[in-house]
Length: 517
Image (cartoon, rainbow, N blue to C red; front, side, top):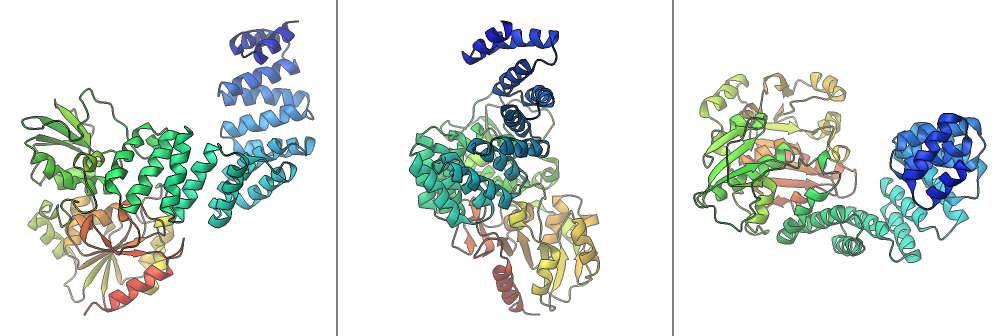
């Protein structure tokens, strides 16, 4: 009777009462299969996935061939992040219920989470074979095709899902992501707006809408939508959301005689790029406090327009307003034609004595000097798209130039190549901070870099800089141009197709040959 009451409470949505009854039942009888199963479902519905998995594992041991238990156990394990552990249970579930499309779908999702995309594609197709109108299977198939870079086929899958359910918001969102990757930005904007209208994951939809606008060069619209970054659940992975007891300044209030705190939120390259706005804030009559990471503090401390530099982590003095550096383009109504300080805006940050120190460290100059950065932070979400191996670029470096590595961190895979190529000088042990990197750059004729903070540093110094970009670059590099409105000394070398560096590297090789001895 107690079990029946618990099940009725569960079915009516009274999980708290059902939970209380089921715990008592299991305490009295630890092998009560229905109680373990239903309590596991309750924990899963409360997103207590590990607790759910523990309960359902006990139930599965009591009855290994109960399909619903296996199905729910596999899902709970996947939802808890234990994808490898979930696999045998997914496999058993589809053996027990081979005509259940949901079982094949969940199996495919878990396999996809493990980056086994070809296998996942086959599993989604099995779900679709059972139910050709299973829109979720079509959408997941589209996501997998996207991961396999089969973008045309991915779009067909998303459109199929939408044709089955015209209000399938996730499919519009995923369609927009693929269209964005294919540079079909007008179409992507339509897709993201549709997903927003259907209230799907609105923060991420607005975020990607912002990226489309920005990549297209619609900076004013883009920076408005860019403020949605604070609402994204995954923002903590790359964007630091801060809480202050003073208001956010976005250009509306007068700063005359006021104190404003400017602070970073993302990477070091972002900090350097948007530092250009500090002068504009100072010119409004504000007392500017700049909170900077320790690695940039010494370099930026030598510049004007800052009333006080605070190293991040130190106590903050009092202030009237605060603004993240990457919200300043919105505050100053930035468009593609009025980007400020595009030419060497931190050139005076490095002392002449520091530059001379590096000049002495270098051997006497007999050839034009070219700095190289071939890889960025390996933890960056787009590292696989933007970084190269040192071995990838060696054949494109003509012998009449002197090459100097600007890499502070050398990956294990590159160390032996670097050590066996004496024509590339390595000063990693002497690069203590950005002051050293900047002083070394000032002794070079050219910097060639992938999309890293060093590229921004070189551009902000006004040094001639060539940047290697993936087919779909970060928004700040725009599309279909070889110059940057953010840095007047920069030239961009773009992939013409995804994951193929041959074209831009060959163009760099040709341009390096034109540099006179």
